[in-house]
Length: 315
Image (cartoon, rainbow, N blue to C red):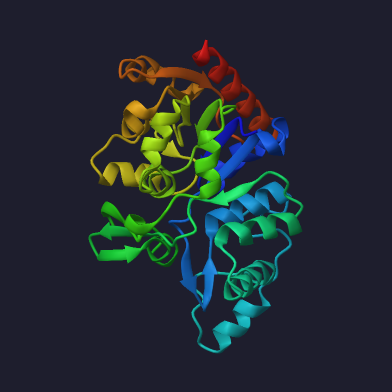
């Protein structure tokens, strides 16, 4: 029985997911991951957010870079560079092996859901991880230098172009994960958690899947989101920069406003306590707690705080 669903992107969301997996058994938690960041590169399908969650839960994520695997080597990239190949998106040798395994399974006809489950099993990850959809959705960033795929904006251009919006190529024909839809039908479902990931590029691609918001509303499942902004800054990634360029204040209140009426509760850091009344004024219940996750204890503590908060909301 699925009691909890977590919607997540990469690094920030993966930290909270790790905390949740320390508390909740695999049968009670479903982890649905953004695939809008996915792209085709060097003939391979790269799934950055899925892989970050996989590596984090497997205990092999690189703590220094925030992406990729620990104890990585770079022989392939060095050789590729000597051949004048594209190396702007760095793939370590161990990471590359996973992408090759994914591509091979794709050629055999497996779905991304099946492949992700197979990879999780090989990495001894027991909690179910599902892509938001088995249909390709690609986030396109609208910038002052033109429209570009997300990874080109994020990695190749280092988030330097000013943004004006986003489009999600292929989303009109994408179908939400069947496992995710079934989880919302589970009478045991207690809570939907929106992890502290970028709302525009990590969570919106999930929520904008055709029919998913209606499914969430119909399930009447309480929804709690955690702010990825602390003290006006993003702990990882370009969230604060994006808010400014979209003419929004770079603070937790703007994140709550972005999610709007779908939220039953919103979690902010103690550094943002001054925003509590402002967010409450928009109709959201607010939990003020420590949201910066530097250690496993921090991750577990925040996960426990969220579950306690959910219990209070449900009273």
